[in-house]
Length: 573
Image 1 (cartoon, rainbow, N blue to C red):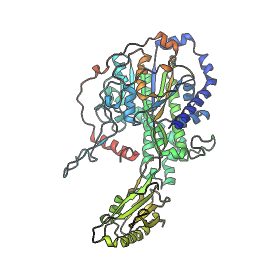
Image 2 (image 1 turned 90 degrees about the horizontal axis):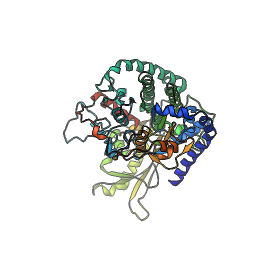
Image 3 (image 1 turned 90 degrees about the vertical axis):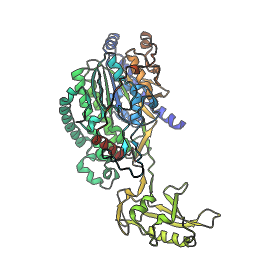
Image 4 (image 1 turned 120 degrees about the vertical axis):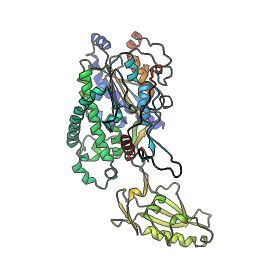
């Protein structure tokens, strides 16, 4: 663990070193008069990018592929952002409330509802799951609530757990806008509906054009080249493309609101980066040292281009947002967690295997006379033991032989054996009993069709497997740019997601709530700002202003669609 922290810290230090040459250039353009003017007309953008990882961002900086983010980093402060839960709904709510999940109430993804024996499935919830990532479960005020109550104009776009949309001093587009546009309370105020339709239509055209030109590997015409890839079969590529298009919609909404409403604070959440790392992390780091990749060798028609292209797109988004301001706004870029490699486990789920295949051994269902377990220290190998009534026990050796013969005959449709080895061995060095050790053929793909005597089944219906090539890591990114922040500064201690909220409040000299878990990140502020802006005394809570509301249920169609999506992505089993 210490070596991982040291590696990440070295990357951050290298990033700061890369920036130092640019700091003086930025400082010479920031006169005292300009800084004072910016202080009087403060604007803030909280640019939330799900799952951004320093190990990806830093190489792209060195290549000059994310110039806007690089400039913001070089003229600002950067830090690791520690994620207590690494769960997106939890952490994005923590970021805007300053509180842990136990306090703000958004605990994670949907919960499975257990039915009593004999109870029928509910017609409006066939998946027997309930959503707990709506505003119905949130128990705390957010930054847009707090600033609205202090008469600042705000815009919140696409943030987790925001349906039903609440009335604020500005515009709120809830996350469910992307799943069902005709639901009530999807956005606030309702009068923005007609404008959103036009924005969405134009954004979709723009997104489809960008995919075609910059990510042809994801386009429909190229997917046929990857027909056996599980990401195609499972619908993961379709979900990534869909959310990338959604991000274009959210970006265009933000541009529209900045131009039309000129809000003091903009809260924008983008998600496709998280999905790109879940699905394509191993493709990206296919090269030598698994931490970097060469400047040459980018081929947009290949999957390893997906993550870098997504990061570059967000750099473009930032550029589009910032040019809409007469003066540079305070820009805070955060991710709710980082990313790393996901161990690619793939093993046969034999309970499902025997049930679905209708496989018989000596005219018997194997489940009736065998038990099995994974062999310790040997991934992919399973041990079978005879677990039969006493009258069958004397024939256990024969049954193992028959089981071995039956399993050895199973192949995929191309004639490759499903199992690489099947050996009957002693169950331990001093044991008189035997077991059958079975090892899966690593060449078998999840998209393969497996042939049984009575049926044919796709391998992904028989295997337990990891659906991801990348998984969440504790440290996300934090970048702070603005006149009150230090330039070219590296925060060497981990800050936490709940520290973002009180830090943004301090920009406007608003106090921290004593019930917040987060604290002001003093290390990123200039001495001059801290001297001229004494920290106000904490108040007990902002939640006294939280309205006591009754909520309607989430529309079943939208709930069903969202739960199915979470299953496709891999967040739900």
